[in-house]
Image 1 (cartoon, rainbow, N blue to C red):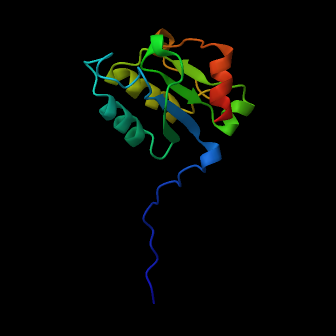
Image 2 (image 1 turned 90 degrees about the vertical axis):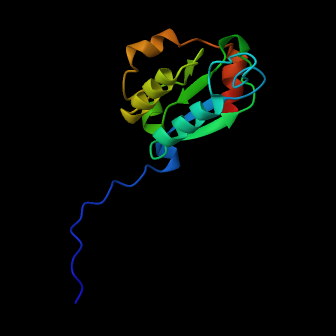
Length: 139
């Protein structure tokens, strides 16, 4: 006779289509110590991946062609967030650990379309050229 296991089980991670996607630029300017020497770029990416492991897909990208905004992070809504009106959020000058933590907190709350971003992220928001936005949407 086997004993019934009554231990609480963690909720399963959302399916990839139900997750936000976080694109971290690591191209010609973003992620380069020569341009932003005071930031450990690989640690920033690793911290995002760890904080969002069960919540979002985090991917590294080559140049997103918004070099004047280095480091650039784009938060794309989940399918549910997009149905609720969420659109990709382009965040630039993400050059400190607190900003990455604020991004992770927002995604944990639901991300674009499902939760308001922390007010501090307004300082990082920018609108890239239409051509650049369209290219990321195709990826």
